[in-house]
Length: 98
Image 1 (cartoon, rainbow, N blue to C red):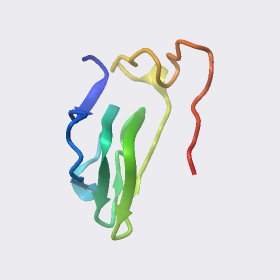
Image 2: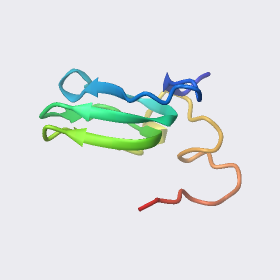
Image 3: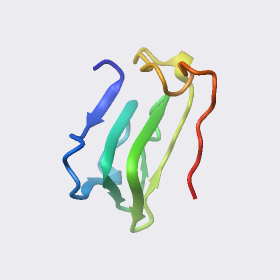
Image 4: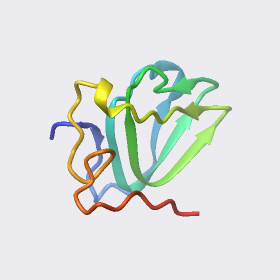
């Protein structure tokens, strides 16, 4: 599964927690489609990543945490999976839910 940095099973619905202060680089796809991804800690997670894509049921930031979402796909040696980032298969861009 080239290009994926973290993959949760679709059957996992329990919240998954990561700590921003220990994540300097999160380069690739974070896939947690049925679970909430919670990022805690007063830091900028993934700031050193060339690109990050998050697919999660919900993303929550706690304690002044930030997740830096970069999109410099060409600067990275990590392959971009089909359907995300600059490797969209249908020609349509992403849709943001409110």
